[in-house]
Image (cartoon, rainbow, N blue to C red; front, side, top):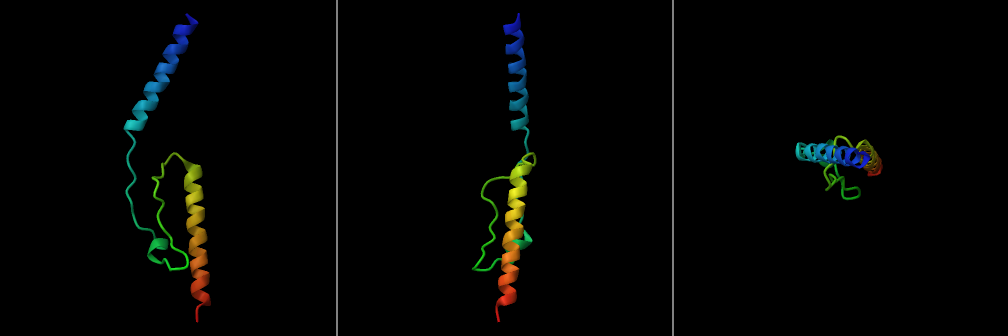
Length: 81
């Protein structure tokens, strides 16, 4: 009886995972302000991998990278004569 219950729970979780993966909406690629202001010294490129709305760690790292690159490009522009 326990084995049947474990198999039913695992099957239910698998079906839930499968249904969520197939109903996920693909993100729309939009150019960012950092990409519009890119310089040869700091190319601000969009991430080639899609960012999931549920993966907050990846989104945080991508945002930190974007802010870092923007700051570097502004510093470089302000130091150019």
